[in-house]
Length: 312
Length: 234
Image 1 (cartoon, each protein chain N blue to C red):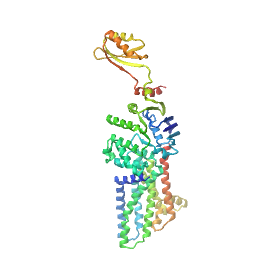
Image 2 (spheres, chains in turn orange, purple):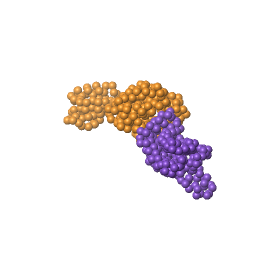
Image 3 (spheres, each protein chain N blue to C red):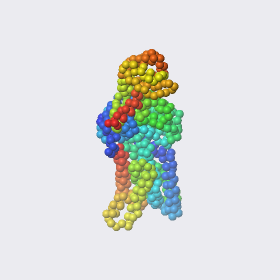
Image 4 (cartoon, rainbow over the protein chains, first blue to last red):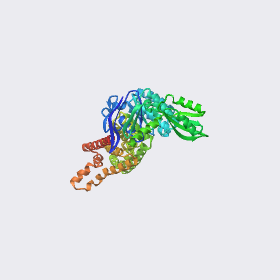
């Protein structure tokens, strides 16, 4: 559906996007991750035809965005980082304008506006002037705008930025629903947004794609298991007991509560680790207060990947 | 294209800009009409139009300053430029919206010729020609204003710069009579927007001025399209 082939963008001497290529299939929801200034918005602006690429080819459903801009743009609904709203219009006037701009047939405009209002859950504010709406509602009006013209592809640039936690959850739900019927690219630097909604993640750093994988793969990529455990009892005794478990590294983390200590256990053979710990502790009569696996979160992976590059 | 035109026109009348333009224009033209036609008893509406053509330098920037500058500043250009509309269509829609506001204002001023028809016997051809010339002149000023609005992100900068440039286009017509050097005259004549209005003032349908105004306007609209396009390619 969306193909990028060796796309680069130079702003003067600054290489904003450096030779990136990927292919997004129909129906995928792709998360576009990166730190601020990594080149996410530039890439999205190139895909939507707002700016041109310095080199490389971008095709939307087989149509080159620079050669056949009208046909390609008709397939895309774009919500830029700052929603492109005309503050002097009411919500329904604005959506009417967006529909006309996207050449929706006259008969279809009304039902399409109603549907967009419904999906973005803003039907009750449709007669209000956009300038007077809260940030969350403005964001939704922007989202409703992307649905005008019934595009196959939605490109959303940081749709949850600046929203309160409730609004973030709501917008995320809406995007999830939209993902069932659209191909979606969603950029964010908030990883939970992406982990929850997307099938696939593309991480970009300094204009280059450093990861392009699905979420399960990314999360499952760390092989060893780490456990955080809290045990009441003498530290030396506990360490001796834990050290008797085969194939595992024990390290003392910190003291907490009365007479309790936290330890971290790392093991390559993950199968029986937890039952082994219990057996040993019962033998030694040491009460176990907490046992928590520490998996790499998406956040950790993200930080690791983007920092690795810096160290190089 | 129609969508952008309609939005732009609505926006003129949703905000004060459209009304301010019309009001100022009517106050000034009313003043000249009273002075020239009613008090001095002249039957020539073109003299009135010629007198108020100067005020266009002051109020056209109000119409054009936000056209593209504001779109860029509020990032709404992202909606326009990622829509199937071409840059040419966007610029033309905005141009015609501004021209419509001028047109609406001129229609209101048709009260003056109507008064003249009731109380006198003016030559209608001359009146229509005067209006035609005035619209051509206004088109050129709007084209210049849009061009400057495309260069900057700030409405204020656009307004002040437009005012400056429009003054420069008016000044040559005032110093032309005192210049003897032929080459300099030709050069000044090329950028003297107001010199070409003299023909209409005398009631002459001048092909030269029509060609000049249409070319002038087209060149500036074309340059505007280039500026917007170029920014996307940098």
